[in-house]
Image (cartoon, rainbow, N blue to C red; front, side, top):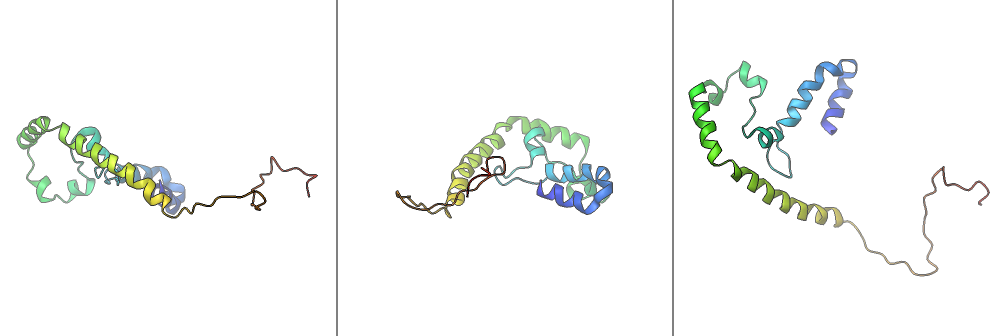
Length: 130
C-alpha cells in the first residue's frame, strides 16, 4: 500500500494509467511472511514481467511450448511442497512478529494515586469540565 500511495502521489492526475503497473509490481514482489509472490501462490508459476518480453532474458528466450508443458506437468507432482514451506514460514513469522513488536514495550504497573494522562476526544469532551 505504501508503494501504491507513493507512486500514485507522484503521478497525480494520471493515476488510472499507472495503476496496472503498480498492481503488477505488487503481485510479483515476494512478501516477507511467505517469501513467495502472490502470483506464484495463486497460479503455481513465476510471472513473466513485461520487460522480459520486450528484452528477453535467457530463461524467457529459451522457453518453448513443449518445455513449458513438460515443466508444468512435472510441477503437478510437487504442487504441495511450496504450500507446505509457505505454511511453515508463515507460522515462524507469526511467532517472530509479536516478539519484534513487543520488544520496545515497557511494562509499568499503576498504583492507587498515580497520575495518568488520558486522551480526550472531541465527541466525549465535557464542556463544563475544568
